[in-house]
Length: 443
Image 1 (cartoon, rainbow, N blue to C red):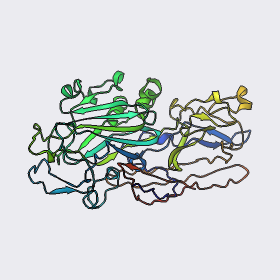
Image 2 (cartoon, one colour):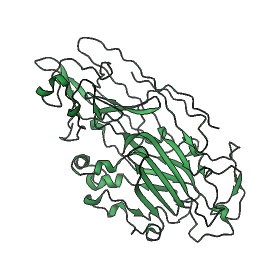
Image 3 (cartoon, rainbow, N blue to C red):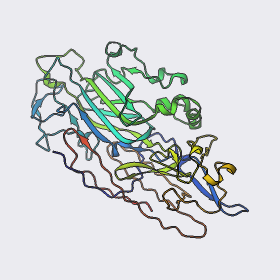
């Protein structure tokens, strides 16, 4: 039986945890400027800060019953294949390995992990799917890292969806023998050129047996792909921004709403399957890191949780979960995504007011001498200066709050703190019963 999560009041500016800083120059959507005609807004292309999206992901594992512990069962490790004294028992907090442990914050050196049943039904394949959902378009900004315990899979596929799980496409194949497993020649990201950077490859780099304790991670390499344009240390980040705008399909390649891990064959310890001891074959995952940012079409500098749903805080007279349309009262056909170009501030491509669309001027400058009203009737708040503190951790995440100063000309606008809720759901006939209570208020 599932238990509903308690609703946590939260206005969350997601914490930055990745290594790859690719967007601080686009952290402000507008600023107030003075002219002979009076003060007015100057608009810029903008995007939210990056965050570790494991904090807000929903996890589902399939097929039903794939998680170990119901009924309880013993298992061994590949290092000690005949010492089968470990037990998985779903009824015991100390012996259970539920799916939510793939996304929890591990503290004090204690490693927690999700674990499947053992391969007791061999030769029937031991298959498991892990679906990660955000119900929102995201843009990955650094390496996606999956940490396995007791050995990495012999073969698996990382897939992505752009339509909230309706359709899926492969992102990358992993195998100890790509030709045998998938009929593909093995490649590395370093083999790719700018012209084929979005090619789906099979790599053997993360599947060969080198010991369960020595090598635990499987990586989808984003940083190396960025480095094809920006250099190994991403020094020339402007070159990456330019390619994002000019190379067809590049930006979509790094976009998704869902990810799915298809685990096809467990670690074998560098040898063949030993039928006399199948209790040492299973999957176990302790952590999944997904450094990304909300996709807001360059029309928002913040992404918040509202009613348990990620939502861009849209500017530039736009609205929608991804700022994908013009707000009411603005010319719908004038909507375009913002652009990184021309550098360094890009182009906001603000929606045009319906009554003034015919005489609209520069898309980056508003002629009005007062801040405009947003689509829901609340006076827009304007970020004059934004400071983002990046915190990179492995086992824990530091949540960084950003204070936004609101400036108006003749009148004072009351800022109302939105109340939001965060829900992290694990589906394996079980819903998480609790989560870390965190309340952050942005004024």
